[in-house]
Length: 139
Length: 139
Length: 139
Image (cartoon, rainbow over all chains, first blue to last red; front, side, top):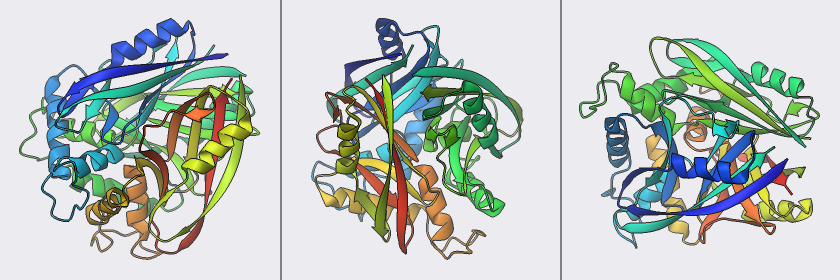
């Protein structure tokens, strides 16, 4: 049994979903571990993670639109708006999705479903550098 | 320390919550491990997991109704509808709940609360075979 | 590699978010492990966990208000209301957030973002004692 940790950085260019599956897969290969779980963790409160269909981009488009409508930027009662209208909605959208995803792997390959991809979900309008920590644990 | 992985298959018969706590408990016993965490992972983007009250079915009934109303099937702006009106809502309901649950165990028993059960949350209307990967890690 | 588990108890005094980051950090120090992941698990279905901004309390205030509006206590179709108007909303708010959070650590310190705190999210009005299980795994 062993553990291998690597910090990745992604450059997001506005609100949306960015697939990072290949980057996570590469860390598993680097770890030389064969069986276990990989934990993907986003070290921010205005970006999150989601496993989503990665075949047809329309699914992600509809998902993003749903969150835009569920947590509108012009919500009258928001008080935490110092960084702009997308400040508070970004925290709520993060809380409604996930900060970590734990995915099993075997023979050094993640046991994801056929169309299941790992996405960084950026909730801010401006460009950001986002830190994602990948921890591989197993044998 | 060791790791033990098993793939389970569940046959869902339409939208709803299906308890899988006993199946997960059985994998822990098979693993012969005594202390650690079990990761339950659903390898699909139109089904998810949720820990929920397992005593009174009315709680799950209300939960399912809430998600039906929060993400309605007849949402006008959905474009990802190739597989039917329940296609896109299923992805969003998955994103709003969980793809993995990580639960601690000790003396080979999960440390779940008294009325806490593990449920597969099926979001599609048609019958499906769902793959759930259970990874036991510990000593 | 090793695993260390500790059960913590928190006394919540009504609906709201309660930071528990320092309590989790203390368990990592007790474990003597240096690198790996810590799993925080709440053993209840009417309380949950969320990673949230811990600098400006207005962000948590807005978050709590959003959940109050998204899952209103007076929802007409709720049938699971035996324990009061906050019974069913508490289960749904739990399902929309998280029952476990998995956070990487290195040199015995969690790799949380600068303003990222771990919060117990209490959804019931009355005082409660809440059990949180912290599992440290690594080397």
